[in-house]
Image (cartoon, rainbow, N blue to C red):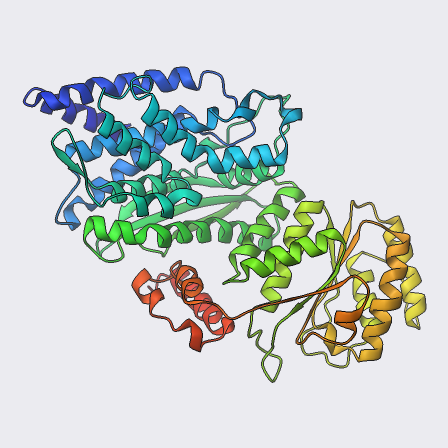
Length: 536
């Protein structure tokens, strides 16, 4: 751990000249000893590694990024700031061991318990650090421990923006200045960059890994190495070395790669204002994540449930806005409503102007994960305006793997579909069809008032999700029908979304109110392609 060792040497050397640093130098071993004891029994075996190994990697990465930037900025980190960065990195995950559910056996841990541990531990880390600094191995210095606790809290995505908005740009302790927001951004990015396979700690044989943890475990198992350097323009540059099992479908390899890269870009966009202000330079981190990808035999193959989680998160990541609509639609589908997502296509039906199909896909993937369901999708096509109910039923039969000869008549197809659902070895089925208003009103009426009720009468664990250009008619009046409308993006939606692929200041200049959803999606896709090719 060369960065940490260099810090310790510098602290000890400075302690010979300045007594203020003697306590900092002595605290390094005490922090490590505290963490060794704190993680001696891991109360969270169903998560990826959050213990001492992970903390050391985060501290190394944070200090390395600060060192790499020294030649490219006017004000490198002081020794006091490096200590605060190291201490916050080392202690940032102690809250994982503190939540009340941690003493429950796995069988008693509900999904909400697991989510609470995952999402709320940064606040618990701050509480531990600020309330018991001496126990954590820190010097007896209340302001310093408070600043370290605040930096640690900010490593959680949920807490980052709130925390840095409450921090002052510069705080003071032991006679020196500490750039809290800059250090907070570095810890969050370093935490995100601990992606390598060593973080995928095998659980003991009696621990059943939750499916979300399975997905994240697989992510780490695909990453051979992460490298951080500085590019020719003085920006931090991230490089990933990925290996997939050669039996994993190419589209799934690409999906996992996209999942990893877009999450990094999202975090870079979120922390860029603090990095830019603290380092006093624009765009301090390149969004062009370099990737070296290969395949090999004997690598881990993920479960289908883990792939479903990844597909869900990738689909949600594609949404520019629609947070409220997404939540409403998921709840309605899950409860059994027949849901139609409403949004406009362009006049020639070639462009999804309001992101309706993005929303359709994301809702389907989310419900699939929540219900452990299978999606049967009728690929009628967005411009097949001559489609009828038979096309929808045939599409669903094909998606369900039915083997059948050409069948005449929608009633016969309906009976085949009912039989197929009854024979399918699945927990639940979500029937999806885009552009339902391509059907005539009579065809839609038969589908919603005859076919779907007949299917529901024969199977309870089935759900229905459609898209259309406009509400009204049978889509609104059919029993148990729900319509959910998309909407135009706000300025903040656009800025947050585009900041993954361009500097924040440029993203903020995009005129959301004057543009449709599709314009920003196309710009985003073009920028992603250019970043992948190294053109930005």
